[in-house]
Amino acid sequence: MSVSGEPTRVMLVDNESARAALLSKALEDHGYQVVARVAPGPSLLSKVAKIMPDMIVIDTDSPDRDILDSMSLLNEHNPMPVVMFADEDNETIIQEAIRSGVSGYIAKGVDKERVNSIMSVAVARFREYQALKNELRETKDELESKKVIDKAKRLLMLQKKVSEDEAYEAMRKMSMDRNIRMVDVAENIISVLEL
Image 1 (cartoon, helix red, strand yellow):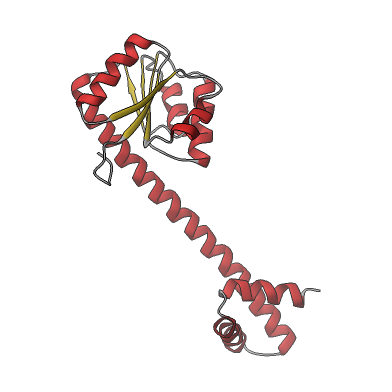
Image 2 (cartoon, one colour):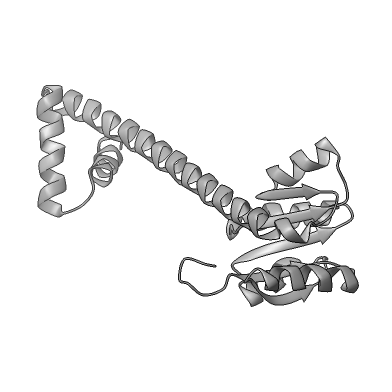
């Protein structure tokens, strides 16, 4: 189930219709709504964009380069939980699948009894990864902002012959008076003083 209480909408990717029907039934038996069954291929990403599922389940013999590249692009632009069931049990391929954004890689076929726990673990792992990714991006943004603010402060200290505290206070006052972020004030100062 999704957070809203509605069934999780799953797009199933498989090029074998009999195998897809079995997995589709197993998913629906555990409360998932299979909104589409599609074959892998170059149009996979456009199908995802059109269908907008909550998660993707891929059932394949072995993930090929097209599937892994598609999952990398999806993970970069529209991340969502992806579970891959594959016959291939090769460490290199598993690592490539995980790097491409696959949240759960289950080798050696589908055990219908474990489908629900596999899906739940994949969703939890996806959410944890996204939280870490967001935290890392925020930390990088904060460090970049601090660098810009420090540079503007140094320029003000040199230009106005003021102390570090006075330069910071002047920037803080500009930020409050104009109701803009400190980093925006700092960027304005740098653009003016570096002319």
